[in-house]
Length: 118
Image (tube, rainbow, N blue to C red; front, side, top):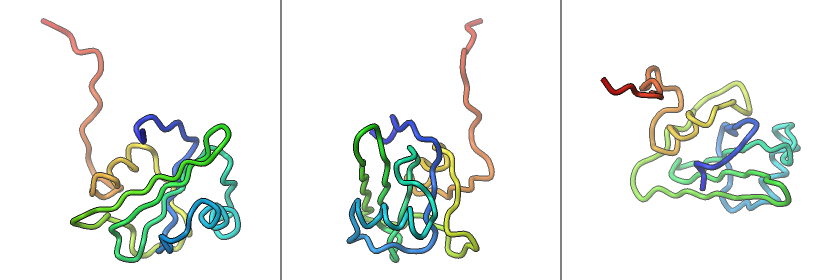
């Protein structure tokens, strides 16, 4: 389902978030603390203090999606310190983060399309 997201932008809410918050609490954080419109078609990503849980808030058409991911082992490579309240990611960087990698990959495989048969 997350592969089919059509988002305008992905915002990482730096710092930690209380994972007891649900849609209403997270949308208040988006609008009041981060200064964004939660209904604008962007995805907002939140992480807990121990970095083993993520929530993604996303508005689509007529309602919110709330994605929740909990790791049984390991931690997400969440940014520790940032001067900004949000970081902007693209979908590829979001997938790296969800896969347990750093969203700031120095090098990745180049996408291949239209292979020729010789």
